[in-house]
Amino acid sequence: MPRYAFALGNIEELRQAGYVQSDSFSEALDIIGEQVPTHLGDLLEIGVDGFPPARYRRVSDAGRLAWQPQGLMAA
Image (cartoon, rainbow, N blue to C red; front, side):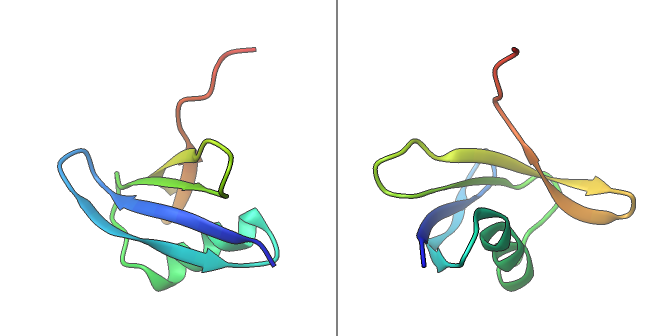
């Protein structure tokens, strides 16, 4: 089971960092969203050792909080 390192906060402060183990990347995002207090606009960096982290922002999607990828390059 992969272990994902994460850092959560906003532009001004890092509020929480740690690790989450899950069968998939999508499940890791869900676990963080459910078990770690998050707020609209929060920034999340998450990844596995040896690779650059993925970056997400907490947004409102149809009335519920969701993770939106950040910093993607245009195709």
